[in-house]
Image 1 (cartoon, rainbow, N blue to C red):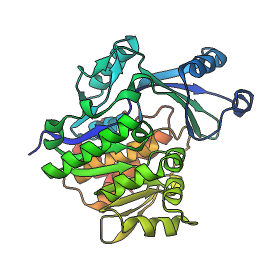
Image 2: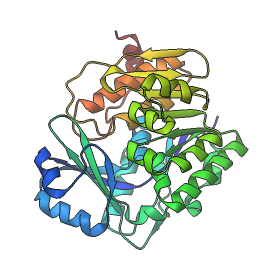
Image 3: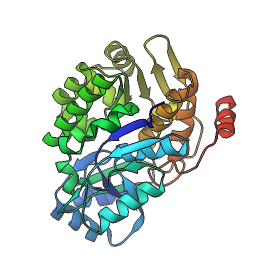
Length: 331
C-alpha cells in the first residue's frame, strides 16, 4: 500500500473568479475561451478594470483542482508546487491543506505568488488570464522522488511545460516514476498550450504515458486530425489509457482494450472552469480504488457535471462509498 494515490505536479495559482460581459473582452483585447499568459503589469491593469467584481478566490491551478477532486472523492493526494513568501502564498497553502491535499510548505521563495483571473460569461465559458509569478520557477528542485515512489500515479499538468523549468521537472518526474513503478498520467490542459508547445507535449507522450486526459479540441490539435473521432483513434494507440471529454456529451474512454462512451449528466451549465480537472481527479480516484474503467468514467462525468452546474473550478462535495455506489447506479 503506497501512501498516496496521486502525486500532482503543476502551477500554484490563486484563482480569482469574475463574472463578465463579453464586451469586456473586446474592450480589453482579450481572447475569449482560452488561457492566456500575461505579465504582472497587465494582470494588475485587468484587475483594476474589473472594478472589484471578484466573486471568489481559491487555491487553484489545473492540477490543484484535480487533486482536490481526488480528495473529495476519498483519495489521498499530494501536490508538488511552489508559492511565494507572501500573503497569497500563505492563503494558498492553508486553503490546499483545508481541502485535504498534502504538500511541502518549504517550497517557497521570494517573489509573487501566481494568480489566475477566471472570467466567466453567461454562456458558461471561462476565459483565463494568468500571471505565473514564482510558480514559473517550479523546477527539478521541487520534484520529490520519495513521494513519487510512494504514490500510485503521478499527474502532470500540461500548463507546466510552458516554462523551461517546469518542462524539465515534468521529464524528471516521469523518469523517477518509471524507475519506481509509479504510473504516469498527463493532461493536455488547454488548446493554446497544445498548439504552442506541441513538441514538448509529444516528448512526454513518447516517453510513456499510462493515462492521458484531454478534450476534443486539444485532441485534434495534438494529433492534427480533422475530426474528434480521428483524434481519438490516433491517441489511443500512443498511450496506455485515454479519456477524451466531449463537454455535455460526456467522454470516450479506453484502457488499452475496449472503447466505451460515458454519457454526460444533464445540468444547467453556468461555469465550465475546472470541469476537465475534476473529471481527471474523480477518474484517478476510481482507478486507484479498484473501480473498473466503466465505473471510473461514470463517476468522472458525474463529478465534472457538478462543477459545471456552479460557479468556481472545484468539486467541493465530500463523497463516501455509499454515495459513489449510488452515483454509479444512476441512469
